[in-house]
Length: 619
Image (cartoon, rainbow, N blue to C red):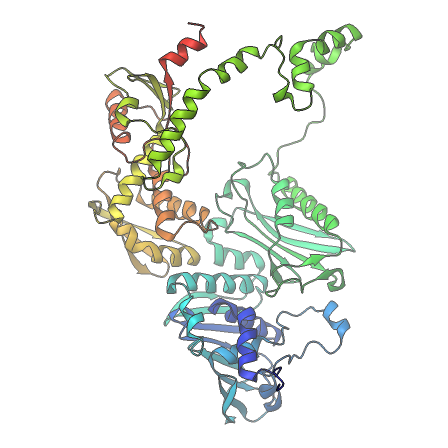
């Protein structure tokens, strides 16, 4: 038998390594930008065409490379930053992965031009599929220009898995922002298809944040600055009013390297506790400087996840620093450590808990019921909860049969995973007559054939709008009413890329929005059945809510958009409705394919049957 183990050819080995290092165009952008920063550049320019699929080019004015270094940098495991094993634990630079440039050269057509300050001429190298096609002297300015063309040209299967240009460009913008945010003292620019997207002048960290996140943050940033012998932390957090429904504006940097850490994010969230809503997320950009020997940055291929020597110390320090910053700038309320006099004089505080009171409390059946192990299985006949157990038992067989028939019916209906109630004819559930009342400006109560139903007006309207939008996407576009005075809306760059991706679908839903250049859009029209004059706020809230769904992979782009608009345009709880509006809402709800729940699975109404009401009252 001949020997069967052999070494892989160099180009194939590089393509395999590229699968870990270069997952998409944004991965290459990250590596090239970090190399430019390490080269001591003060100006870094990024150019992309077709979201990096056709071209990624980074030009810097850094130190440049000699002819030998220019050739060596494309070899596997070649690096200028590690000479022995101890160096791995003292790394302070950005790009140091030895496979990066070799991997890029394995899956793209690469051109490199570089020159050191003391050299008369520079070096030009062209590489394709890990093979050097050309190397010659060239007249070029100090620094380095590296171009990647036709990414994955020799791995078509990988190229087919790339997302749309708008989606890939968003990933590139994310990586660009993370590097630019970490180095405000460097000029950065990003140009896409010949149009400049970012132009970030040198400045302070606050100036850089305002340039990237928008002018609305200019007066809403709180400075964080704490120094100790163990570590330093600095940066900014947003005031509580800047909290959003999405995590988008949250950045952690350790030794100027962007990281993702749910642990540290929890520390910041704890610092904001009781200051923002539980489903909201604060804005923060925080930098931690710590001795590299106290952390391990090699636990993840992209270096975005790291491990600290003592995570509890870091957690406590981050939480304390943010709390101190918020208190120092009078964002947190004043703390009063004196007890209220009324509380001090109450019986629970002033009078002792005597043995008689203790025995009286512990001897009650209610106390015993809730202190037994597995108390749900030991409800006593003498317990005060007897009547609840009886009600749960009554009609269980009837409910089981009804539920089974409902599931059989649901198997023949689309989107059945959202339906949680037993199936019945919609006509039997629908409120009849004109006797509708509204409770707490939230619930609509109406009588039906079996008893009565309580409808949650916002949930019901969400379902109505969702199915209306779904029909629009499927071929029945919603009519657009053009505005006499079109409104202009200016967005940050990330939201600009996102809105461009949604323009075609928004048009089907009645929104006519046109790009106006320089991150500005003009709202030419909106749906005819939506109140005019609030289009700008509507789009801003829509984008914020859309990003709230961005981490849920089970939704595609259109599904996220439909759910976002349905939630945003629905009549909110607390809104008073007249009789005609309530009647229209009920009629529209029971004309829906699935009237019983919202797209997110929340119930639109609850039904109270007459025979069950009789049983509750002992009749």
